[in-house]
Length: 266
Image (cartoon, rainbow, N blue to C red):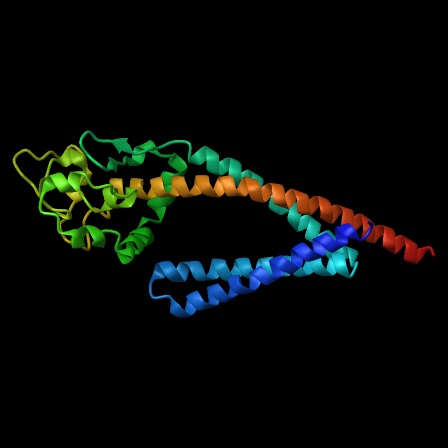
């Protein structure tokens, strides 16, 4: 029974050590295959994550299976900090994603998005890095499917279920009242309105469209909001797992100390 907790910690860390190998490999592969700045941005965090998981797994494995108390102590300290960090991030994620939602339009299959509806913190982060984000969105060709569809009737376009990014970045705002030519081609008319600043930013150039519009930023924030909420829910499950592993690790550390005392005082 005394060795059960040590064995459990050892098994968990063998599994995480094995998982870290493809994570590092994926990061290295991405660094070789990356063609855009967006892809290159991901490679370093992925490699760093893989190395971090590998080192923590080694510390837990050596500490539990070889009964090296100092390694197990380091492992438990890092686990404790990780639990606190994930707990704080989960609360933060729920707070900053509490605001904002797409606006339903009558007779439209898609929603429209307003930047001011979302968290001020998220707005600042997006505005500060929009140059790189815009480049990534253009590289991802999120509007290409709309260009390729070739719908000739405005009624067909209005029935489309566009993603938040397509709605915000690939067409002018409904407020502009532009005349429809194609999904990504709209003309100004005598009835057009420019009360919304995005109307002046719209361009039929496929490399420009509405990528500089506030609605495009809002569409991105709506995606971030949805993704962060999913991550926060997964974090709750991961937290429970970490707390269980941490508890078992504490038992293993106590066993190591007891084993050391037996060796010291036979």
